[in-house]
Length: 431
Image (cartoon, rainbow, N blue to C red; front, side):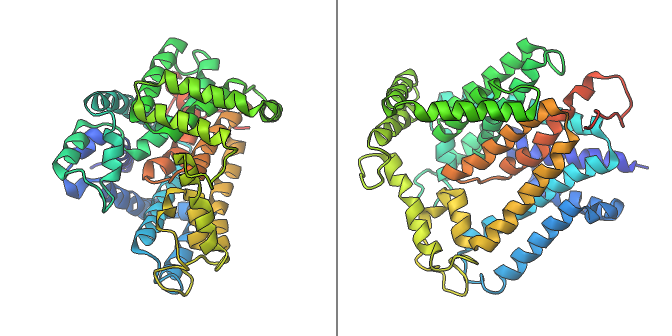
């Protein structure tokens, strides 16, 4: 008879494999892709661990799901189908991620949590190598795959399927790459805690090469920023935050010309990556124009105009969003607004919707922090911040973003248990 724990291992392994290993997922039979394992996981919990559903974070998630269900079937019934699908998909994947984290804390099987996280690390490493290979064939392969989901795409299906079969990163995994640097710095500073420094350097180098090869400018900028910030982290959280505050004040006093020149230099450094090189020079020009969105001479300025366009719809129905008891036009909702995650969520779901959603994130962070030793808390916050900050500029699209935010940010903390010869219920001391 198959043991309950073995069934759990299979389901969790397949969940992570279908989320973080595109190469295998591309050849997975359609009936056994991620959704299948997600449904199995939730069914497994309800059947064998129903008490977990009484956890206050899970109850909050269930309340949010009920709020969405009622809203989408009443006053949001005319919301664009695209926006409905995004809300539903996102909320389900967040619910799944939260249940995984809560499960491991409930059964206190932190060694298994560590092993699951380590498996994901391996998946990401292989995917990073395949991303570099895919980019060597077509430097814009990821942008083409992402844009293929648009009705205006001119990329043929055969080309898209070919690059997907190569197993390079998708948009969500590129977001995961971006968020890894704080924890890599954490383990680098604590040599031998999990891996020796030389292995962390090798792993980090492959990830950064893969990130550069995707030519996703915002991902690269946030990765560089969090890398630098993480370097200044110390063991005490409050001291780390004070150091960052001090550095922020210094950076705010630096003349604008310094940033303009820095971005121009970086544009030259990345001249072989044409998309990134262009973006650096474009941002330099945008800064030089004092971040004016009236000047349509820069791509950055044109994209920045999306925010005020969204706000025009938001102010007409601020509490419950622009689709509240209206037609699909949503008070002249700006169709390209979804490219800016937080502004779009505020516009489409209103103040009440976004407060409910961010409450889930806040409670998760608040509950997580006391479980960590002081030395890890800063890097946990920087990792989760990098994902949330990404949504200020771009769309947070893909389950991998939220699995990284919830599962990996917790799982990384328990990785040192793999090096300890103790039983499966081994715990890291919680403060």
